[in-house]
Image (cartoon, rainbow, N blue to C red; front, side, top):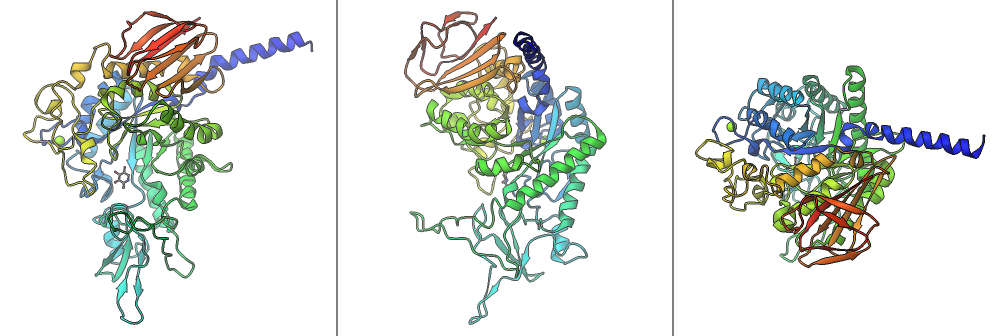
Length: 566
Ligand code: NOJ
Ligand code: MG
């Protein structure tokens, strides 16, 4: 074959690849995911607590702002010791949130709007009020071994009993609690009201799949798996539990958290995730429809998270959440952002070609409070500019900060400030509820920080958010695997750049100044580009042209998106 012909065929092939590239990206791979916190999103019945009908009434808003899927924090029946992460009945809706009919209506509405709906799933522990735990206490047939039970240790001299090991609970204190009735300790890696399941028991594993099937049959599009790095704990052959090495003494004289080598990140956790994935894939094979996605919550290192995705033989969750941006704070610079992006891309992207970006959730202080309000829109551009899935926590799209006066009795208490009611408009309770009180106080800044005041305002946080989600649907942002491409990096200590390209067609450039100084650059690229998105710190106008071959300036906190088209 002549080299000329060969080149022609290659060119044709490349052309075919680039034309289909966007289609080869599965729905979740470039999705705009939105975390709905049911207590705080929208209250439909005036009791001051958000509910399912409230969510249903606001799904159109998610559609409006370009969201493609929402994951909802737990909605199951629960005594709410950990705000629903303590499930007492896995197949019943918490009555304050509504009924199963309300759930079905919410799901139907979401699908009507072409929104995917993902449920939070809490497999590591149930509530102590769960029927399964009650049966386990009584050693009822089949349930004896459902939780992690042990006699503890007896001091040979004093005869005194103590817990089986020195393991500590995430929310403080021993991870073991004594039950008089059963005359044994049970393990709980979180609150005493959250007993850990025994995942070495096949019956537990099967029941969890039954629960998943229950919700899949109703039509959910996937699960966000809670605390997967806590699923399995080390137990010696002789049945004892090994102590973990102590972490030393902190400045206040308290024993520091032990090094959790026997309770967190055991490889057996990963095996369970593979099992779930097989189950989900099989479900899809039998029932059709789009990929049922598994999002995973584990504050683990990238090596562990990479294993969650696959190990060369098995596949696991599509999306272990990337919490690297959750650690950004007021001292973070563009260089810090680059370090955090690299920490993910160097391992996860390099191996698996997938990414996701989380900057906020119900367990961490909100970004405007952590980094400063002037950086909110710049970070929105960066988060959505990077390849992969963006994950938004309700209120992030309008730049809601923490409100520290909040106090619900959360076990940690420190998590209330990021859970205050969604700020919809300037009316009573920010439009969240018609009630006289709300479960957490509404941030008093709501008259000037809400959806309504930002809607349609060109440089508002909401409008920038919408602009970015719209860009995520363009070829340059979607076709990031085979053709086109992307690059990112700190151009200086404070200026971060993301470039997204559909080769020979169009290119977008995010330039975000996270610092309070004017910055300039010479000869970035031989292109003239157009301003298509501007934050309020930018002196430019929509549609203005910028010659990037020359010297360009960025004002303090200025963040913009530029476009070039062939
Ligand atoms: C992670 C959840 O996000 C958090 O809110 C909860 O307290 C723990 N898991 C325990 O379930
Ligand atoms: Mg309500």
